[in-house]
Image 1: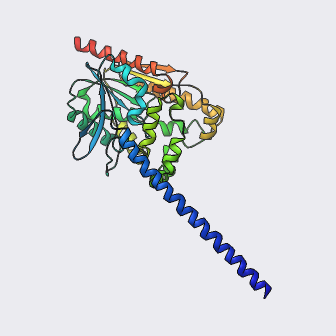
Image 2: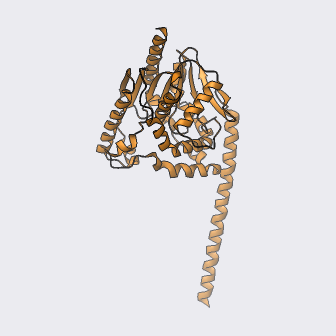
Image 3: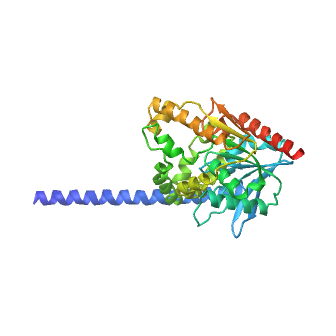
Length: 349
């Protein structure tokens, strides 16, 4: 009898523990949902679009144009949640010598999401519709960071008559996955992050993504606080847009691979060659010798992209990581200025 009574007590205790943990979980989720809804309202009230919202066939896309003059510089951000914010440290400086426009792709920051697949060809079509809706008809200088490289490359293939020059800011290469995996001992395909991105997107309503974003060191402390707050404010909208682009990565590379030349357009390819930090190597599961081989192959890939134009020039940036526009904004500003001046000289001829 004593043994039976002991088991009953044990199971009552286990039941109480389970119900307590369940109640605690429900409470945490409830608080998280309230936190998330408050965050969305706060962002909408305090961080309205910095530019204008343009209709592109039932959806609105955000474009922020500053300055005057021709050609118009168009910033194409990398794969992530930053959108227009990624260009904070260079936008106004470049707007000092010509019109400069940053925009948010579908589902990023202030731009409406889309239900259809997202890859380079659809990004190019969206940008073309956005520029038409915004009344931008003068020659363009496309500035593409990371996956923005394949996006701008594809844009040249589809709407090349508009493009007068290009700057690649540590841009991706369509064959980078296969080429880099030949020289390093790990898988480098961004699908490694797919499960994390999809999980974050699915849990965005709970507030956990916003909570973690608010405590991250976005821009390594180099971005203004307002920009970091804007990133955090719209993180849960942007994570879904970024996830859609990640899902379309292979299609994006196929789209870009189909474009074989930039002709004689002025082109500057900026290559970030700052060595990986020990913590970066650990996160990538690479040894120091892998990191060195990775950087050398990255340099070679960029040299190949430089040869896409008869007027291409590669510039090595030894003291910047992948986000050159944040680590060395002066380099990006100078490169854009150089291409803008070449385009103006071409127009004068």
